[in-house]
Amino acid sequence: MPPVNIHAAKTQLSRLVEDAAAGAEIVIARAGRPVARLMPLETAPPRRMLGRLAGRLSVPDDFDAPLPDEILALFDGA
Image (cartoon, rainbow, N blue to C red; front, side, top):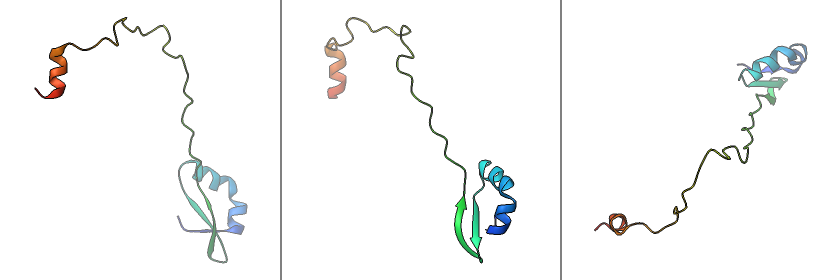
């Protein structure tokens, strides 16, 4: 999109903001020289919710028990 002069930006601000919200980047110029940029805001990632899976998962009592020797041997490449 070509630069928009300040006077045109003032008279068309609503349309320019809609264009920017849709993803366009608008350069505003004074006397033909770019002085500002109008662009969309980045959306914030959704907030994490602690405890979302509470009661849905179960951890076996022996989850930290040593692995069998046959499995450990696979890690050693033997």
